[in-house]
Length: 302
Image (cartoon, rainbow, N blue to C red; front, side, top):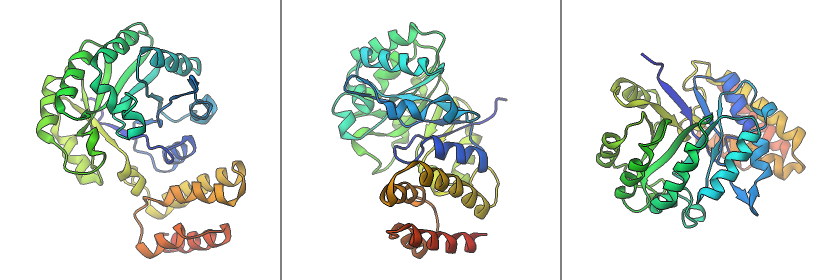
């Protein structure tokens, strides 16, 4: 039996190359790390996004560059840039629910434009050297959109489809629709990676035992909250080692306390620690106060 697949979901502002490396080295347990989506800006791939997938940034970390596009032209330009950076593995984002993207026909919004998705599918076929996957939701407004997308994607050679059982208009609120999820799974010819509301090992184990088309799971906020969850490492050790790496990079590469603290606050935003500890970190407005708050947390967790 193939090993159960576990992916770390991409989260803008959190899972950059520094965080991904820190987690891979000090926490572990993840099969692949997906990058926050690479997009066009003023007609060209964002330089910041391409720096995040540079070979020296990702060396030793099993990484999947993700792109977001509204049509074949955008998709082709992004694929050219990713392949030009040395990658032969690309994920297409059909799941981003944020209006800035979806209202422009990207992410979940592309699910409402099956003709454009057909054109993108043909572009994928022109690149047999690339292993493609797709991350998607049930639809933007209706699961019928997702079913139509599955019909298009079934004709492709994909490693898998990551499926989140909510509509785009729900954002991250409301209940998951497992009935619609099962309908899309039944219609899909590809292996499925489940994504959504996995906060602990019990949730993970339930999907591991299911088998069938379920190849694995993708975890996002659950791993941000408990980065030690999969690797079996000591909570205190994992937190200290990961934090030290993120801290070192922030203080060496970023300019000014405001930028540094913004990056460090992001590291702790979802971490599952006590309310009082969390408040002390997030309210720290100077590095000195931040360092004091972190020293207290790490001494208590060690």
